Length: 299
Image (cartoon, rainbow, N blue to C red; front, side, top):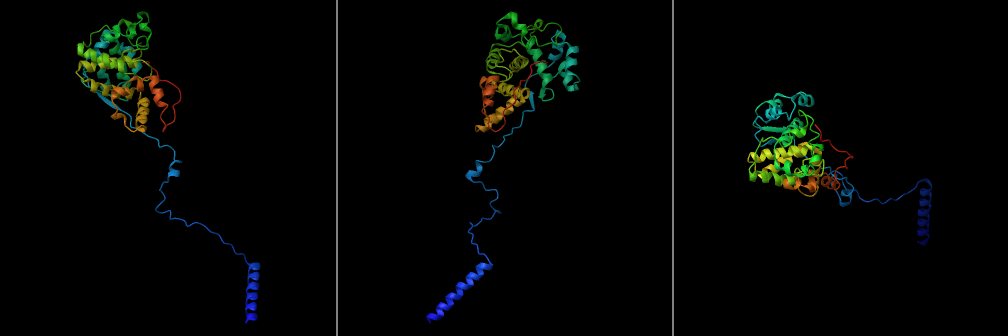
């Protein structure tokens, strides 16, 4: 019996030796794979951290109905010489019949769009420059009367007949009562523009003096301060589209939307002045920082 066991054991050893000589045996242990069909888009905590920041996009403001009656102010401004029609036409080029009516017609309602925003900016610039108001007569722009004609809003207005200062705060296009004037004063001190660090109360550039003109018209037309702020923000958003798209992204990144933020706050120095915007822009994470540069304030 013992002899049989030894013979069997010897045979097994010889078999394994010969098998190993002619073949190789490898043993590999691998983890069981899970199906990719149902779990292809499943994210783990570690994989989420490797995904680039989502780019937040917002729809720009493309038009705004101005709650004012423009009437024949265009014709009056031209008749008074604040606008030299020949110079104006040369700069503005071909205009649609609807846009021409703003200059030589009688128009009740104005819809400002991306296409006519430059025209309306220039018309409001001329109006704001010429309309008599205490903001011009007693405000910062006249703190040194010898320099008043050297600002972009005054010396930069080259479309009048003669020197622009000949028309500065000289025409009673709209006369405001005490309450309306207070509204203009208060709002103009709080509304800034990203081309500079001055408020509308110091209208040293075209956007500032045009906004002043718009505020005067809205006050004269009985627009509430709350509504006027909304319109002013929409107008600024068309004049400075990139600025306010960036601010919309900033608010979105911080858990809200720009239309839920008080327009008066958005228009304040904190966000809408040149320095305030730069500070806010530097905190935006989802879009690249802009190249250095600035827009112009000319006709």
